[in-house]
Length: 87
Image (cartoon, rainbow, N blue to C red; front, top):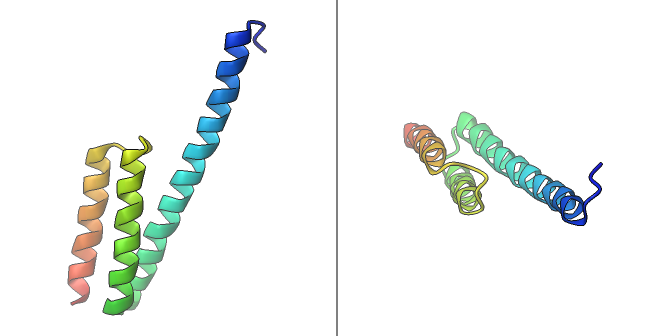
């Protein structure tokens, strides 16, 4: 446990950021899983809606620094390919 006041504050800030990032990653994974499930069913209209939500979550994760932009691009590309296969 830190003794210096600024070090104590850094511990608290790190815990808060860790919790925020964990929640963001969890929401992202949930959105992607929902899209994957709907895409596996083959329902195009539901897949379109789930795709938009998942892509928005990916973009938000990049904006908040949770994901790297290239990782986001790869995930969005993968989802787009799956969506286009449903046709």
